[in-house]
Length: 195
Length: 190
Image 1 (cartoon, rainbow over the protein chains, first blue to last red):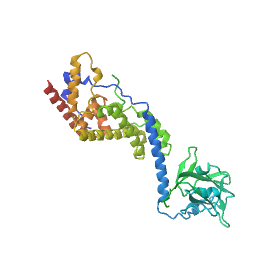
Image 2: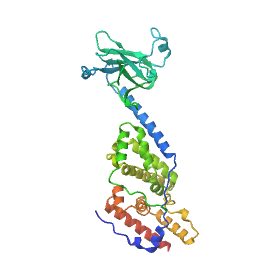
Image 3: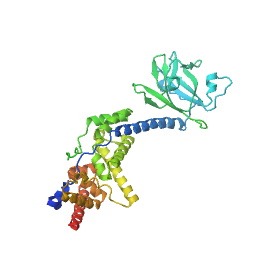
Image 4: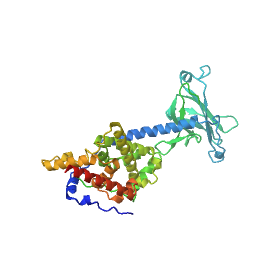
């Protein structure tokens, strides 16, 4: 590497005296800086997750049913899919609580788990209550389904299999729940949006 | 007057590497460690380039957020701080160029480089501060940067070259021009 020789000015007495007027004192930024940076970082991380979920959801794909045959025979033998029914809830043959939520979109959750004795859905929309939303097994198949109304926005969820095994949806994006488990993420479009 | 800032290191920092990997793995909170560790390291450098502590604080904040956004591009997590310096440097230089275009002036950024706090009783020293301040105003931002890194931060030319990515030849030219510029300006003032 080339060496840079000392410039004659660096040896000049008057210049050296001038250099002594340079301010070399430490500069300390305000104590609040860390908090501001982290607030923005958290906001961006959350937005990134939401975008990821949304991109997954709105990307052109067959969303009617996603089956993962490679899961079959692997003990749990699970495959999952979500089918969103774009139609608005019709009040006629629906439970009252559902009909009241006119802004909701119906989302069908499906899990292919032929060996399971029970499957339920727990998520941010039912306060993570694993007993609140059981899936029903379709006759003669290993497919478990449930349809629930969800308000527009992002929700996290997962399946509880046999009352003890947490299974994130393998067909959906997922995030760390902060306790070593993965939660699946779904983005439900607002009014006037179609999937 | 304090010691010079810590020299840019090439060895890597295991704690930084671990924090960067954790953040990339989804543990966003670990980013706070990096912010806390390096928030003030280049504060003086940014202040010198931008002319005020407030502007430097904005630049450091932006640089940390930009670094978070682009963290996956930090190819050597153990060298996070060197990579962060480049982001901050780009932010400061871009800010200065924008400021220059806007105002047509080139006098921000030097007020803090010379020490108004040294406005001592000695008239002679106050004049020195003024002379150097005026002289530094006439340097380009790259020349002023290299001058500040050399004479305020106390880095060697090798360290400046490694840190800024400038070749030694370019650095030599820049310093030579900076010194010649200063010499002429100081002569005129005699």
